[in-house]
Image 1 (tube, rainbow, N blue to C red):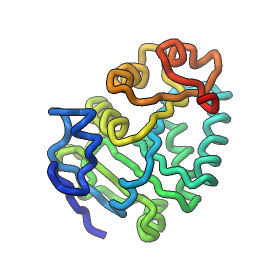
Image 2: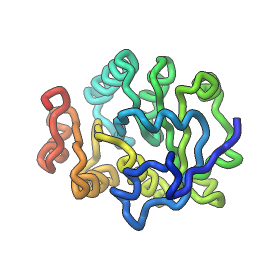
Image 3: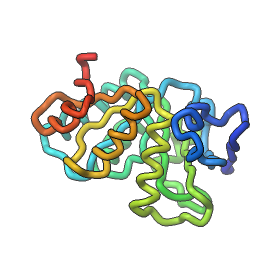
Image 4: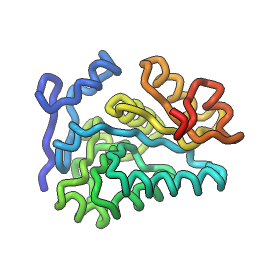
Amino acid sequence: MNIAYLNQGDSWYPAQLQRDLAEDAPARISVLGNPDILKEKKIAFFCSSKCPGDIIIKTYDLAKKWRDDGVTVIGGFHSPVEQECLTVLLRGKQPVIVCPARSIEEMRIKEEYKKPLEEGRLLILSASDKKERRITSETSQTRNRFVAAIADEIIIAHAEPSGRTEHLLQQIFARGKPVFTFRCKHNDNLLTAGAKPLFEQ
């Protein structure tokens, strides 16, 4: 399977990117997999690397619900909780969009990606330049803004106070996009900032 490219102005290029990121929208996106998935309603999923145990359990149950309900989820799937959710999602039949924080050119395709790619239900997207072959803090933040811009709504399972994910939340709110999280004491920072409780929307 070959990598394709979407340039600004192409019919397949996500209009949300230019609307949400304006001049920061990537000029070109690298695509591996089924681009039809971009037409689906998409939920972006984020979770900090450090996450309380009760939220991990809630998130795992939510991932199974997404899988069973056929929800299209987009994310970087980099933190441990995000990776566990991706494992659950890849076992289903619904579309998934994975966005690495690096170039996908010459990237080794993980074994668990191969079958979903062949079935046309996995899409791998990257806005990174060809020379960006390593994941860094900077490319991760750029990727997260990219994911949030493409999505129709955002779910943040947990964000450490004053961490990068919480900072991303402020950027998302500035664009007026809906953000949801679990109602619990560990997420008071998100709820106070304006995130809506999951399942109460």
